[in-house]
Length: 313
Image (cartoon, rainbow, N blue to C red):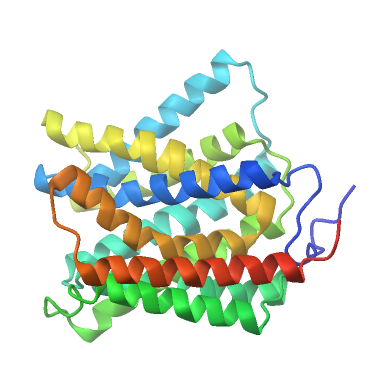
């Protein structure tokens, strides 16, 4: 039996959880697409007049209900308390802390472009933490790729940066959110938990739902949404961002490591740009296309460098 406190080898993972080449390519592409869809769901909710904390609370409440029903249908074993404690801690970081801080930053006036650029610091943060706690050492080529990816994100969101005036301290909120998501990602990789994906998603959804509902109650926004448009946005977030994006995020993290999955998120802003064009008809700029290409090059550099630095299996 593996020692839960022992870091895993760089670029590797437990042999039983590592996806094959074709599977990881498909999972990575699907992760980028579905993770980006969360920004579209947030925009749909905002256009329908949904209060952010209400949308988040009911998003995770609906998700928890669906997953609990699935557990009963497939007669899956209910997790033990130790699993609840660990998965709950990850949920408070990766879902509650990350999403709440990002939405709070926007609420206090931080524009979307600046939030995206701050979020793009996550791969570097995770690479630093992964090197310290997981043994996933980032070499010079990987750091170069992450810098190139950050530059690509900056190009994509350059037209949005500084569009609104927010107090300087408000920019710390999305940064705290990035630290939360990065820390949760590293813990997800470090703790060799044997819960399957259904159990993992259930526990994290329940804890996140309780935390968001508590915040909604304190603010007086816990009542169910009154319009079908807001419920449509919630169902979009449940289906694409949670059952799609976060499930794939956990899968790829377990398979190929924290640095790998975080680097893929450099492709989130360019993909969101395409989502917004498809759903809302917002035209794609030449600068955005250039940023997408630069971000893709940065991700490619990191992934190739990580593959070459991985020990032979």
